[in-house]
Image (tube, protein in one colour):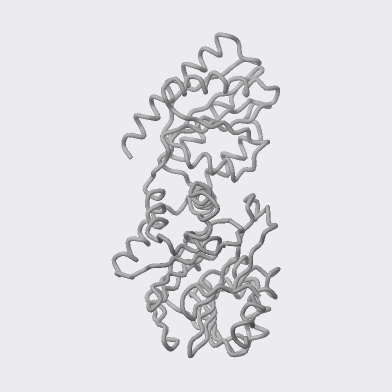
Length: 404
Ligand code: FEO
């Protein structure tokens, strides 16, 4: 039993996944949690479940508070299996419960589970549900980040149960931000937020802004935000909302991420004068080699910086595969508000740098052209050119950054 009462009669009944390191390809160095919540009221209400591996843990947690067969309502904010794959197990212990879910959620749920014996009620944006002392409000958040998604507001508790939004992949014994910060730094927590946002929510910045604006317009009082992953925000929920608004609005560090791969170190050698050129313009930079780094880490570093230089060798007249994969993945995340450049070595025909620029343009990103290329290992003249391009890129990045 490992429950926490997060508000009077509202309990965290989730599970901590200390060991997960690969979350559908997203490398979770710090594990994660699957948060779900139980409201003890006239109608006992469970909000979300957990990943199926942890079904018995959440059931044990629920059982430590109430008899599971007495659970009247189950709210499914989001059907992705990390939150809803335990539902079949859970329903065996509370078969008479009514499931509240969006219309798209129901359609998805039917693909994952045999729902034929379940009592399911569809809810729409703004629908209320009284469960006794507590009044719930459902707010649909389609495409944040799946079509089915919604969040649940608990009026009397001033509590927003926000599903994936405002989450972090962070396994910790602490449940709350203030507890976590008692023995960890704000930077660690912020970095987990940015990592999660970059890898999961980057495509949805405009929707995030609109949805937060909607919540503000509704005048909902919120003094706690409880996401389905990681730390619960009770010390300062306004701070995490502002972080989201900033990221959605294009805020980034006035810095450069150099993301590259290399065959025989030639492209790698080009990073040295590039870094010097960038630094000599007073701009910070970070350097990431793709095959030595999880893709999700590279995505986070890309997202943190205003400018990105892609180092790409030419192989078989096209981009080196790991860099092509990175750019393909990045395109799916629909990045905005970043400025790009490219460099790389080639042996005979070249072509990778040109192809990288084509990719940047397809993504609608700003560019500094034409980049730098080196025949085999960079010569002294190539290194000088890299240094100058690093300076030029830093200057253009600062000019571009000034508009934000
Ligand atoms: Fe944490 Fe979209 O699932």
